[in-house]
Amino acid sequence: MVQKPSIPKGTRDFSPLEMARRNYIFDTIKKVFRLYGFSQIETPAMENLSTLMGKYGEEGDKLLFKVLNSGDYLRGVDNSLIENGDTLKLAAQLCEKGLRYDLTVPFARYVVQHRNDLQFPFRRFQIQPVWRADRPQKGRYREFYQCDADVVGSDSLVNEIELLQIIDEVFNRLKINIAIKLNNRKVLAGIAEYIGAPDKMIDITVAIDKIDKIGIDNVNEELRERGLSEKSISSLKPILEIDGDISARLEKLETLLSSSEIGMLGVKELREVIAGVEGTGMKSQVDLDVSLARGLNYYTGTIIEVKALDVVIGSITGGGRYDNLTGVFGLQGVSGVGISFGADRIYDVMNTLNLYPEELQQSTSVMFTNFGAKEATCALKMAKELRSAGIAAEVYPDSSKIQKQMKYANAAQVPFVAIIGESELAEGKMTLKNMNTGEQQLLTAEEAINVIKHR
Image (tube, rainbow, N blue to C red; front, side, top):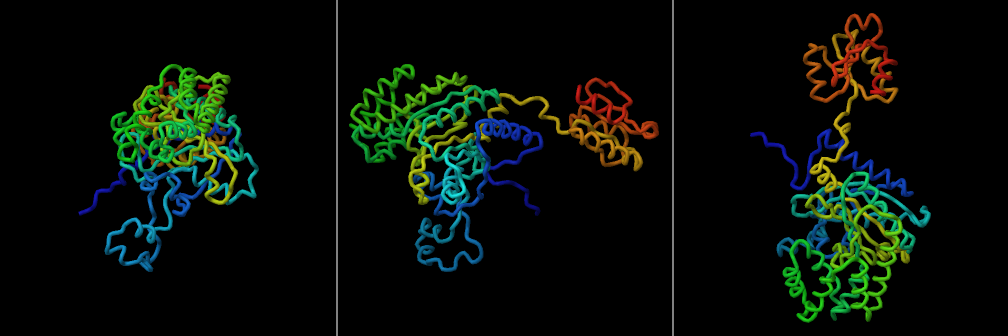
């Protein structure tokens, strides 16, 4: 019995129309990145596990796809690990490489490895797939694209402001209404100090980052499981319930964290970024969310998350400041900040709201008919002239009845059909048919180019 073909869960195939739509998203993002002076790089799909492990927190490490060593992968493995079922230690011996979890850690590795060739501050963008061994669900995939822009080698908060401008510009061009949520990792550290649990900061951030998904009661239960006292949990509640406009919330936060030096520094940075954003006249809604942690341990300052307002879906963009990431690869004192557009979720949002330009559904502008060898030769020559003028053209490959060829053109939504029969062949012209209006004109290739370009 022939096995039915399939693809792994959490992955997708994309049709020509779907690829046209995805490329529209990628091209829009690329144009904005370049507009702000970012240059493109690429890194391998696989990285050494030593590069990836320990950079995303305990939960992130569990989601890394590990790649089995090539050849005799069991050679040299401690057999007792197999007998005892010690899968974690066994995986460490069987797998030296892993698929990248995001683009930021590979970028940090790239900066350290190529530091002598780079001019700092270095502004790069990168658009490539990443992989996470997550449970597939709506808006969450195991293979998906990220579109990152980062600046390394500068501590200035001007970088954060410009990255927020990029977010605003991209979604304005894509016509997606968004809310940009901001927080600061130093504020989270201050909160941990305020509730008397500075050593539990990571436990706190991992738990409260889930508040939108599981609710405050479940967050509190997770905090108990992570060893926080009832007093600390009770002290955390009023901070998470801070309300009012951004200015009022910043004032309340400043009052609550007045005894925490790092917390006050975080509030100061938030004030500077928000003031800078307001001064640029952003179109998007900007908000402060003290529960926002993004779940990644490498953030040290500003934290950014973007939500679509008209579709229920997870974060469609995120990012933040990471002061210490290159340090783990041996390069100290290089601060970085970046954002990552979740292209697959943006794609889902745009499909739901039908935000694509109509012309994306057209890959071919003109189809030439084929009624025999001589006609096909003429069609190929004229098609080349049209392509030289930047017009997408194709020649129907088989000599078939006109009805079949027209049916194909209609199904493919080709706007023009160029008919070359005996009479057209004799005159060295084509009969150009507008498939929308039915109008037909006998034209040279040069005349056809002018009609198509000015339709």
